[in-house]
Length: 172
Image 1 (tube, rainbow, N blue to C red):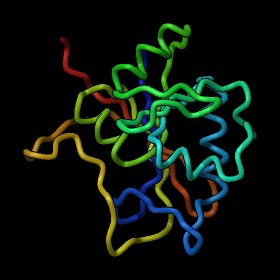
Image 2 (image 1 turned 120 degrees about the horizontal axis):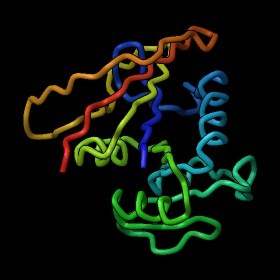
Image 3 (image 1 turned 135 degrees about the vertical axis):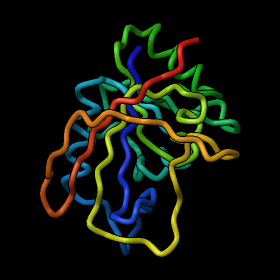
């Protein structure tokens, strides 16, 4: 199964923190909906999912397989809850998906990256800089480098630039 990590970064490389004072750019959100529609699924952390859900209801994700990775939650109505990235991928593969979209939460992104479970990354770089922020890490302990191959680079509008890279995964 191909795995694609989708994230929005700031211009200074942090994992973008959205909020009332810094809402996500429409172009990045539109791209997320396009990616979700193409894959038919997405994997997200519990806190990020709760933030996305807002007032509840299926919204634009009515026919989408949503997998929430959580160490504490065991059941969330309308979605599948698993306790690990491997379980999330196994579930989507059993459902017949060819591609899994990893969509949210720095902890979820870092767990997939740290376990070498990502084939491709899509970074939407927003035209904002943060003083403090979270980082996406392939390893929390060491100074490792992972070479990537640029697949595509395109402007999405409003100053958002999308970078798409392929990652070489270790063969197990």
